[in-house]
Every structure is written in structure tokens, then in C-alpha cells.
Amino acid sequence: MKEITPRDYQINARDQAIAKIDSGKKVILILLPTGMGKTLISCLIIDQLIESGEIAPDEKVLYLVGDRKLKHQLFDMGQDYGLGKHGNLFLLPERNEMPARMVRNHARISKIIYATPILLLNSLIAKSSRTRMIEKDTIEKVRLIVIDEILDIMAQSYGKRRTREETIQYIETNYEQSFDEIVNDLIEQYPELRKKDIEGFLLNEFSAKYWRLNKRFEPLLNYLKVFNSKSNKIIVGLTASISQKKKRDLLMKTFGEERSIEIFPNGEDFESYRPKIQLKRIQVFDDWVIDLDSKIKDIKMHNLNTINKAYKALVNRSKLPSDRILLFISDILGKNKIQNKLKEKRGEDFLNKVMTHASSYLISTVARQKLLENTFMSFVRFINKTKNSFLQKNDNFQYIKEKVEERIQEIKDEGGPYISKKEERLIFWLNRFVKEEKKVLVLCRFVKMTQYLNNIMKHKGINSTYVHGKMSGNEQHRHILDFKEGDAMILFASERLIERGTDLPEADIAIYYGTTVSLERYEQSLGRIRSNYRNIKTAYTITYNQTTENEKSLKRDLAFLEIFDANKLIKER
Image (cartoon, rainbow, N blue to C red; front, side, top):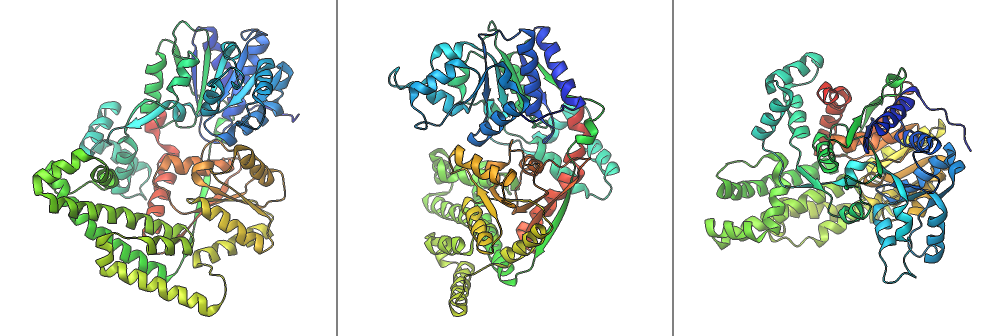
């Protein structure tokens, strides 16, 4: 068992939670920035509730966590902290890993159970009592439910984003200031930022979709009776999504405001451990990629002209807002109601033309992602299998196909494996960092890219590993441990898998092999390396110069550094 010393603000969070529980609150939402130790706070609360007798000897604790690998991490923290002194800690296994009878017995005698919502629901539902992995009596003994990243588990988005006008009205109503006053206040704080960048961030941050209870997990939450106002169950929710006010409001409304309370920890050492990270950029120069990226841009602009005509036909507005293009295209391609309305307005030929251009826009978007963030062969296969009628006749697309064929022939003539300029640059920096004995987390958009880059480093004799969402939970945990405690110096990880909850303080450096639009997801991903004011680490973004990828990543970094890290509007809420 490791010796773990809680920080002042973590003890403060525990004390606040215990005091609120003692006063009759049943739902505690602990809000803390990424990387500040929410899991340890939950261990402190469990320890105190058991020792005080609030959780009786025959009652249990249930940990719910959003994905498979994180249950291992929470289980490890419970063991390291010493929760085993109160009874057995049980990591609910995947199906077929252990006979159902053994799982039932383990769960029955355990004090604390760790599970994902899907795994727990499947364990409770079975064709017969023999194959059921957890008995109803076992779950009825649960007194405390700890839900990691509770907003993600409970909240589900629906509907369309607010328009610019609706978003401005929402901001002004909530903060009792005009939009211009808020923007000017931020310009005074951050004079190096352009006005339109600040406006763009605010509009993107507050044009959130509407939220409702997650239909996927609602049956389990009802089974656990967490919404029953007469239930004596205690729910402790953990989240780093402080800015997601609408999700938090949904949670308070769902559980009942009289039962629920939000807790913001504080303490003398809070500022020292608050997230802080240094962002740097690695530019890659490749005229071939720049050329193809510009052709894809021209194709999308051509498609957008027709898509805007469809938008005008439907809503009588001349230009589709940039943040609603993909949503509108999805509606055109997927909703008969929209298709029928376009057909009535402009005829079947126009509908067919719009659908062809909408499909082309989506194909071009994916093609660009594969060009900039995936392997060369993945891009080649995608281009060659494209059958869209507009693209097959488009000069720019035919130019791209010709350039691809030329590049393939060049590779054959050279007789060696193809390594892109971006991969070359990444390998150069990884070699340098490893020689400096630094561990590196590389975040990738695509699953196959994690394996591909790992194979390159293995071939060069550098110990590395990879992790992605298509692995089993046990395999993910094993690969992550190889990086945390083993010989692997580099971890290639799919960003969607790693962005939430996976603590990787062993990483000295993060490298983002691509871009993401969401500031929240970017913050969560970079938060994995646990960089703070006491130990500032560096995160690099590697991008092709003079491409859309480079433009997006630059805007994202500016917003992240200058606003998201210190947005007083969020703090005041």
C-alpha cells in the first residue's frame, strides 16, 4: 500500500461533503479542474463515512465510471489509499472472464464494487438466475454511489445549437451585462487577443445544445433508485466539466435542488496544483500536402455554394452559420422531412443535386482528416473507393487522384516504406525526448494511427506502447501500466479513449497529433499529464504549415491559453 498524503483542498472537499451529508443532502457534486485529484477526494469521503458509521457494516459502496479502463484506475487508487481495510474491493469483470456464480459470490462479500454502467446493467439482466452476475439483494445493500464524470454519464445532448442571436441573448441574461461589455472586459485582460477571437470563443462556448437525462443509462439509474426522494442512498458525483452549466443545471433539477449541492474545493495549496501547461507548436512543411489540402478546400467551397442555396430555400437565410454546416448536412442526408420539403420548394433535380454536394462535403471533410492525421495508405484507400458523382467529374478531385498515383509510383521507385514529413518530424522529436529520458504521451485522432506509430518506434528500437477503444478493458489497463510503471517511454493513445479520467502524471510531455474543435475536450486531453503551477509541463501540437489543420490548432491554442484557463465568467457561476 502506497503512502498517500491528501492536499489541503482535497481535505476541504471531503469536509464540505461530509458536512452537507450530515445536514441531509443526498447528492453531492464535486467540481474540480482536470488533474487535481477528484478520485482521492472520493476515497477520503468513503473512508470517513464508513468510519463514522454513516455507511453501516452490512452496506456497500458502488463506483460507476464511464469506460472500462478507468474502473481499473479507480480500483488501483482505492487499493493504494487503503480502502481495503474496510472490506473487499471488487473489480466487476467483463463477461466470460469469470463464471457467473463466482462473480455473484465476490460481489456479495465485497464492500466496494467498481463497474461501468453498461457492464453493471448487463450483470443484473440475465435469462436465468444461474447466468445473472449480480443479485438484486447485493445492489439493494448499496448505500453510497460514486459516479466519476457524472455529467457525461447522466446528460445526453439533443436538438440544435443556439443561433448567434440566441447565444448573445443567453449570455446577457445570465451575466446581466451586454455582450459588448463582456467582450471589452476580456480585451482589457488579454489585449494580445483579437476581438473576433474572443467573440468566437464566447459564442462557441455558450451555444450549447439542450440536455436531457441519458436514455442509455436511465434504466440503470432507475434500478438503483437514485431519483427516489425517499431513498437513503447517497450519490457523490465527480466532474471536471465546470463550464458545462446546462449539464449541471440538469443534474440539480433531476435529483431535486432540495437534495443536491455543488461543492467547489478550496485550500491554501489550491493555486499551486491548479492546471497550468505550456503550449508549443511543431510546424511541418510539405508542399505536396499543402497543395492537396488547398484542392480539398476548393471542393468544399464549391459544395457549400449549393448547400447554402438549400439553406435559403428552407429558412430564407442566405448563408449557413459555419458551426451548423455539418448538422445541416446530416439533416439533408438523413431526414425524409427535410428532403421532402426541399423537393416541394425546388423540385427533385435540385434535391438530388443538393444531396450529391452534401455527400461530397462530408467525404471531403473525412479525406482532409485522413490526409493530415492518418496514414498515407489510409488516405489512398479512401480516395480510391470514393464513388460520389460530383467528385468523379470534379477537376480538383481528379487532380488529387493523379497526385496520389504519382506519389505511389515514387514510393515504388524508391523501394522503401513511406514515411510522411509529419511522421518524420514526430520521430525526430520523440527520439530527442527519449534520449533526454522523458516519457511522452502522443494523442491521435485515429485508432489505426496509434498502432502504426507504435510499430514505427518499435522498428527503430524504442520501447513504446499504444492504447485505443477497441481493446478490452484489461488490455487497455495492461498497456497503460507498461507506460506508467514499465519500460515503455512513449504511449500512443486515441484521444477519445484517453481524454477523460486517465491519470498519466508519469508523462513529461504531451504531443497532439492533430486538432480538435472542442476546447473542453482539448483541456481534458492535455489534463492527462497532470501539469500544474508547481510542475509546468509542455504540450506540443504537430501540424502541417499553411493548412486548415494549422489554422484551427492556432485558434484553439489561443482560446485555451488566454480564456479557458482563466475565464472569470465561469468561476463566478
